[in-house]
Length: 148
Image (cartoon, rainbow, N blue to C red; front, side):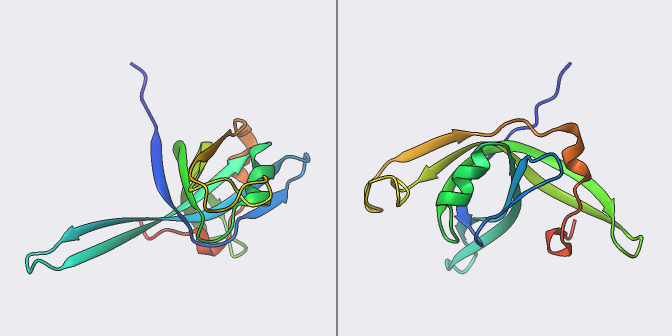
């Protein structure tokens, strides 16, 4: 029996994406995404709970990410959860949980630069190329560490 690893997120970028080329010329884009859920506590007060997700995209979609996405933009992402580890410069094993993006939809109008105004409603969807098997070996910053 096959398993399913599917994540759907709608949230806002916590910082401008970091896009860079790796050894073989392939590009990788990384950014944080905030998703916020609201609920009422026992006192009837509204409470917002924000979760932060580390997101990575590979391949041609990184050009779109680099050109159009900025801190605060709202995006819809489909992807999968990936867990990996690496040894830091001191030989300490670090564990990373991230979302490997497969599809990206820009929410809230056409990105500036596509001839539309930011006030237009609508969305633009882009698909990511599959990550190579060597992609999980890329070392991440300590800021990518999650507490679980």
